[in-house]
Image (tube, rainbow over all chains, first blue to last red; front, side, top):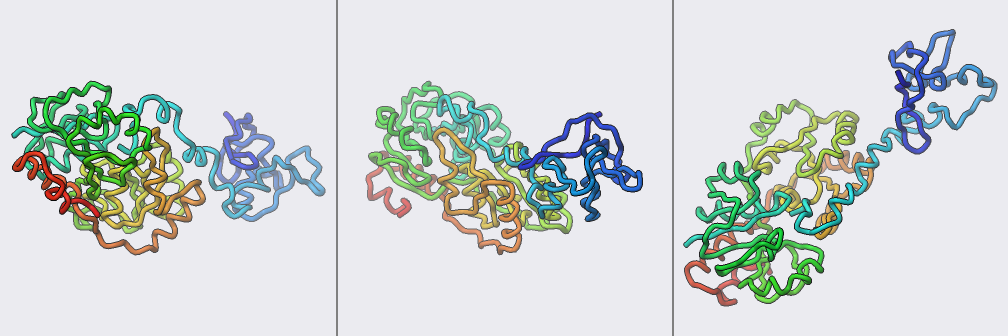
Amino acid sequence: MTCQERSGFLFAHPCDRPSAWKCHSCMRDICDSHIRHIDEIPWCVSCLKKQNVTPPGPRGAQTQGYYSYDDPYWYAGLYLAGYSFYDADDYRAFDAPGRASVGGDFERDPGGS
Amino acid sequence: MNIAYYAMGGGHGHAMRGLALLSRLGHGTLVAPERHRAWAESLNVVFSTSMPDADFVLVDTFPRGVTGELQLRAPAWLVARWTRPDFYESRRDAIERFERVVWCEEPSIELPNAIRIPPILLRPPPLPREDARRDFDAGSRPLLMVLGLGDRQRPLLEKIARLLGLDLRFNDRFPAARWLPAADVVVSAAGYHAFHEIEADGVPAAYLPQPRQYDDQFRRAAHRPVAHDPRELESLIRRLLTTPRRPASAPDGAMRLAELVERRMKLGVLAEEEVAPLALR
């Protein structure tokens, strides 16, 4: 089972690390990097964010002054008021489709006919 | 007199223009890919996948035929929509065989014996809004309708609909424009038929133009609300939800073409003064 949290700085995408925990709140499978423990209870960072709780660092990280570019808490959608609500797949919907439809004979051009 | 409308081609637009004309004329054969047979039959239009013997032919967009196969043995008109100019420029020799060119969008190049008419659209009678919404099983929430857009944007549109609390429906019905009254906002690429049907209906719409080799959907939608990324699409839809619907309008280009064809049938080759009153100025 892989982690069901999404990560990435500019665009969120599936984490894909092996999961090691289940979030106490949403019951998703979550990896070591995306789980936080509060009173020994595992929470994913998304659920903490929904509750507006600033999480401790992941286990093993130095908790005092903890900050990591890789911590989704600092860039996921709810923190930046929707900035990352859309992910790479959503942006790809605006990319040009495969070259087949923009090359070749016009007579095979399927669109806008 | 036997009329044939040659509508071979990849998209729906060729066949839709042919159906719009022939359903108004009340006779003639639509020559189109097999997948359009059911549409033709639903409108009582004679359908064929090969060119029948005809006394008069209308050829949609491709002056040489879709694979260069077209052998014209009867007088013919070319029905042209806007394309990138080099498409028709490089086919001038084939276009010279046509008695007349009928532009149903802004002409992309100067051609002899050309006239322009309003967009050729099916313009089916719209359903009352409540009936149209019932057909889409719409609840009390605003309805975001997707028309003439591929599946690639589906996950994004589902996400936006969830965020804004909208019912999302993909309109794959025929003729789709009949159900436009169900929509509060429409999202579409800017293909010929969907674009002009939506604009004629007046429903608020956001466009996601798609790149094509010779068609130019970005140009077609240049003066209408266009989204270039997910956030822009979301904000456009938010705005359009509070934008009032324009009254339905647009002159009937298909009816004008039908009148022109009937004059041609009655009078033979038409002089300019017989064509001019029906042309768009």
